[in-house]
Image (cartoon, rainbow, N blue to C red; front, side):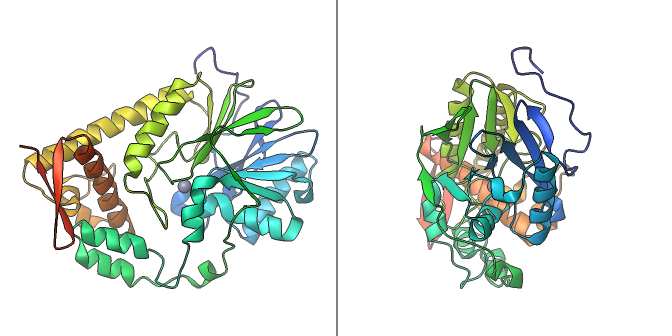
Length: 348
Ligand SMILES: [Zn+2]
């Protein structure tokens, strides 16, 4: 770790180990379990304050989350009912739904970025779990996969998930003044439209949500009502946090080890390589997002697209689609609609 970053207390080897792990004075990382074991866990952060502790991100609503969170709070001398407010980086279920559940039972005040209003208002399971993504897949030239995604049932437990607006929306630049510290809200659209991060410049910390993750590249625009070019926004949002003074990265998934600048540079380099690889496939004759995705290797094991399970295949094709959109906007390639499918070619 770089010298100018705050000193990090010792952390457990396994970042998912339950408990309250101190990362800075008055700031604790609390890993919470997730129903999908592939996702490992989500970090909530507890910020101690004279007016009552504040939680940043909340976990996936459910009795197990509540139990692990409550035990971690108890180890610090708090109860769930002590939480003064819950700040949420974005509306994905592993960050937002437990906040809504706690609001119902305890009245904690919940705040989230204003840009999440589109997907929160547009949330609707009546047409299946991924109706928008199925339409996107058709435009990407993957109608069969779209049909299978359309046919996916909504899991019974998902109907019971708490949804709805927060108590207050957070705006870009808004200062969250606690008794003992000031958090700056920064809009970082990309992973979702309304994603925000919270900076604590005095302590040298960035609560980064899913915007900057240490081990993986976050999905882009995977939400009910995405914007037209989520990757463009995402890259802009990466450059935005790169311009801030460096800070310790407090991610929603994974360990605390890195400075924000180091990881943002890696993510920007990754997307540059990805844009080059996608442009290369278009030059070689792949015209749709589906065709480009089929031509590229996936995962660390370099698997073919058709070896991936359907939901991963969907994410892969949508990721390529977002890269094609950026290449089209920057004039490297151009796209035309043919019978509802977007076809791309290198600009003459
Ligand atoms: Zn997320």
